[in-house]
Image (cartoon, rainbow, N blue to C red):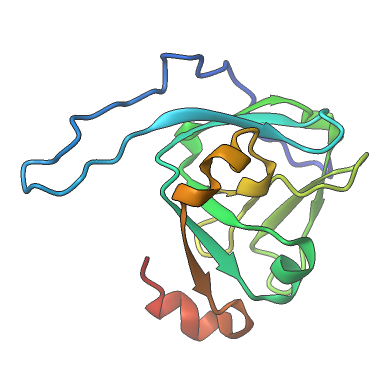
Length: 158
C-alpha cells in the first residue's frame, strides 16, 4: 500500500457508534441522526464502516472525481474504521500530492480518500456504501467546483 497505513480497528457494531439524538435541538432545528454504514470495493477485499448522518453529499467536477464518478461524504477519522483490505489498497496522488486517493488494487474501485481540504478526514465515495440504493433519495447533493479548487475551497458552504 505504498508505505501508508490506515487505522484498522474494531467494528462500530449495530449499537456502538449509533448516536441517536433527540429529533430536535434546543433551537428547534432537526438534529443529526447518526448510524453505522458499511461499504467496500467491488471485489469485497476492502471493507470499511462509518458512523454518520448521511443527509449530505458533494459532487466534485475536478478531473479525477469526474473520471472516477465519486460522490463524496466526509467523516472525521474517529468515525471511520477500515475493517479489512489494508494490504489490498493502493494510493494515488497527483498535483499538490496533498490528497490521498485510495483504490483497491484488485478491482480498481475507489472507496474513499483523504481530501486535500482536510487530509485528516475521510471522504467516502457513497456509491460504495452497501445501503446507498436505499438512502440515495434522502441525500442532498451539492456541487463543488473542483475545476477551480483554489477559489471554490474558500467559498463552498453546504
